[in-house]
Length: 267
Ligand code: CIR
Image 1: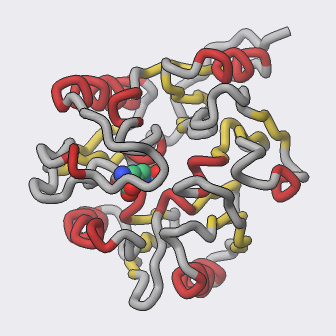
Image 2: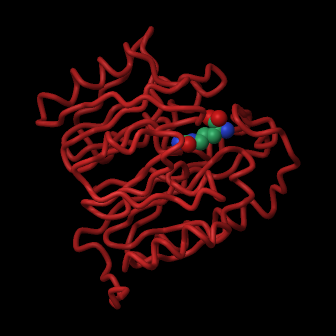
């Protein structure tokens, strides 16, 4: 029986840093999908609907200008990992994306006094960092290397976080394969990540007909979810979760999911 409740806005308002879609989006990096035409007008409308929903859920949204020559800059999640105690500017694994961090590094000092950076030869994409409380799961993907993971561990362990490396099969980032949908529950694609890694939390598996369905964005107690994945949406509802849908299939052509388009943190 689904739980019937309307989630209140998070008690402490979250700040959502987003970034406008670059006119160069069609030249985005692609690893697991073929290149297809991306409709910029439609992508921008969907991105605006996403920002609007974040506002409805109580977030303050701050949109940084597009990186004009940075096709993937809308996927701001990959450029930083922001904790209450420290913000870490990443060094993205794709060389084409390294220039994206400057604008984010310039915006974050308004919110955090402690700012650190991943240094060469380390690479780390924010899409590989899944936080469950003080436990960080870090995907050892094609974008995040052992040195980047070690630097992250060194930076956060002083603040009481643990870091566990997680290997992946055939997907871009850890959060392509698994995301949190409640404090103690993850949504997971078992063909891309070993469900045993998450043995001590509840696991909801995606519908196998929707391999890209594991990327959901948790805002307070509400799960923000793409409206083009109906089978897995039904599973989330069956678990009694409060789910709000947004259109997201245009940015999905650039291998972007919902977590990718914002950095959420307490200001
Ligand atoms: C890339 O390949 O880097 C972009 N086209 C997609 C990045 C998506 N970001 C994410 O999953 N965190």
